[in-house]
Length: 318
Image 1 (cartoon, rainbow, N blue to C red):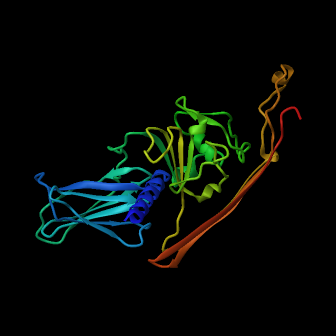
Image 2 (cartoon, rainbow, N blue to C red; image 1 turned 90 degrees about the vertical axis):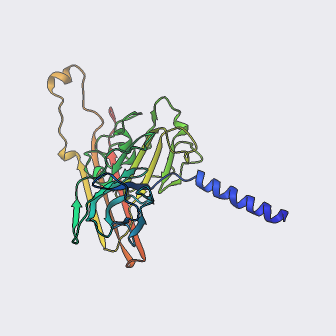
């Protein structure tokens, strides 16, 4: 009996340790269903679909008309509400990001025939349950922000973070910038990849590696009130990688910045005062490929990426 109790205690301790070591990487959709008079509707079938789901998820509203879909992967979802004798309601384009709680309510009207009402463009933008301070960069933002392609550059774009350098056009890529937020200690910063703590144990607060920028589906930067699963109160960087789907897809890239395309805004008057150009960019190349698809449709997916940067910059005065 003592051996069994000891084994159970070890299992419980391991489970708690695993939970404490994992950073939150999912979101949630929840809400309430009512009729046109404001009365709650129990027994409504709520169906959740998305390209990131192998199969649709379903839930039934409770006695108070509420439902919940916890631990959802990031992505765009469609929520459908069905109840006999009522018009079906569809809410599409619901965006779920890391740690975001999307409240999707529905009002269903009585109908004697089969009718469906589709509501578009109503994705919640405010998380009513959020207590911390964070900034989420979706794949669309990561690819659209006109900056160098580097996670430390995204830290530069985050409100409340001060950096020790400026990455201009990629001239500082391949280096780990130091950063601080709200007077915290940089050694308290934490790095997570798909919810797993990957902080460098030999250089606390630093990342253990560099990354292919096109590998990210999303980046979330926490600067205050971090999730309890993070062991420190420092900046939390959560990197979420892309995943496959039932459709084959892929892309490649090649970016180049060369000194032949650079301009110089230092005129003769400034030169006479001792001014000169900054550190010159000689040649910067960023290239890679990413692809994914089904191993077996509806069962298993695969995805991978490869990227490389070749950075050649000069040093002022040399």
